[in-house]
Image (cartoon, rainbow, N blue to C red; front, top):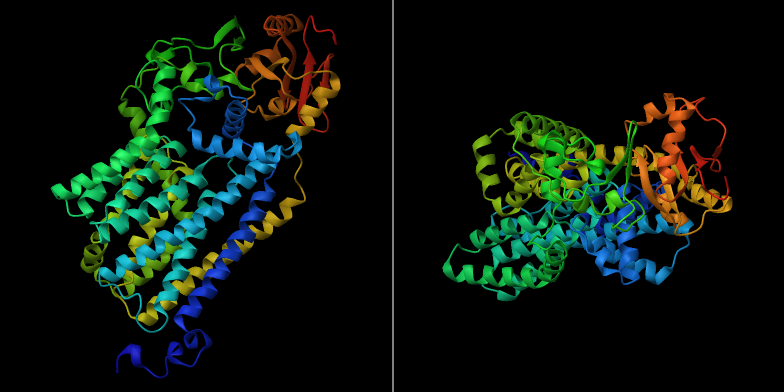
Length: 575
């Protein structure tokens, strides 16, 4: 008797899970995962509601520029516009006070998580249809269809909330939205290549992807090539792909035109070349780049106004709270990215290490695949089956490989991981019996559930321990007498500038990271020279975070109950 028909087998018993109608079971699974995603996602987002990275501050500054009609400063060759447009819309609708600005930014990404889940469902329905066309068993007895939905939701959940998470104030959750839509439409094109309207929609989605992340401009070429191959690689299909390219150009073209006009050269964004130069050459401190180590000739670098220690000034012409990161493409105009064998090997090694850590984050899925393969080790069949899913994993794999040559971060590759995992599982699940497939998937989900519960409890506890440090600093500066529009200096700020945005002031000069030791160990005469250099830029105070113990002398005052301190500069009326 075959294993599938053994009456004593647990899964053949009249268990409630087996007695459910597949359609009803799928609905219950959907309700469960939507509820879990909403609750766990909100708790994760709210537990870091006052945390903002420098990228988030730049996106907020650009959103404010759009709202006040300052398009000259809004068009930016380093930051993609879509996230700032979303933020601008939310700021225009809700008009948050400075205290609530960062939480609102996190809620924008929480909304993105829910939109991403719906777009993932759109992709997954098409994925299941693609499996059926490929001869995979997704509708056979024993609730195979609901089990597939369990696996799909689990992979989405793990990728969106564990690999990616809602802590970074970046647009990567919205990149997931575009990626799921793009892959879903691509698979529909592969299934029915004769429908021209899908190619048009495909081009629009790819254009939105570029507006969300500059990386999607070259990646769109990969998607279009995949659509051509998957749709038959014929001359007629080439015309359809040309239609997709046309609609991509219609969506992406206006911003490319505005960007090129702003830069006086043809460009779709400078972040790729700058990133390669920063990490492969490398450039230790891009925000104060002076063309060192033969990395190029700066056309308009930040200005050095003191040599020992170095003091940099950047009051004009770039807007933003902290101009060096508001538009790094301006300050690094003239940088030359050089191929560096040693640097490239170092980056590839780091990328491999990051991928390994991501692998450990999702180790339960790897164990599930290995269990399926080792149970019935027909490796040739696995490879053959995996190859048949190339339209799913090819664009995702190319995206991950491309990032590995420059920089891999969890948030960069997270939008593409579900496609790789689903392809691998689809190939591995075609080998063993239905009972083994169900057991392995439920075991995989159980391990993931334990991890989710642990992190959920930690996030729940963290909700009550959040302080809005940036708001406290801004309030203390305003209480001291600083007014919106005033200029300030910083010491080793590492681009942490949100407190300045909330206070309405602009950072125009800094003592860069790595130079602070000279300042703190120097005598009063050296420190006075630095203060005088700061004051020469029109700055009223200098702000520092976490100064060394015992180094704070007369003239310094603490900003609220925070690790920040400030010092009045010469010539200020408050001195």
